[in-house]
Image (cartoon, rainbow, N blue to C red):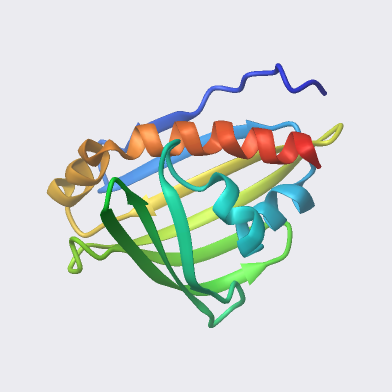
Length: 161
């Protein structure tokens, strides 16, 4: 496991359902990848694109909990919030996700962590929205840049231990 390993982030829009599926492998066991998604001190180090500051209003990652955070750059702020519907350590997070700039657009997200053995994990994330138009707007918003750069930053956090 070296820090020079590069894993491709696959982002696929489903042709039949207003859903986006993201698949990414990490050179870390599921418990470390899970912790990076649930520990606010780690989350601020990697979530979102490079060049954005992240501030967490609250982050209660447990079944029935909720979260809110703000990304900012150059004096502009972008808020996001949601609820955790099911959290199972090291294997699953089901949550809602709302960009406060489009408060009617709520995504239902499911993150599944798969232990690949040898200290590696595959994360599969699905985001389901109300319509194909909402899904396409979600993808067109630059989500791909934020996801790819965020997962590159997560690689760096995981490599530091």
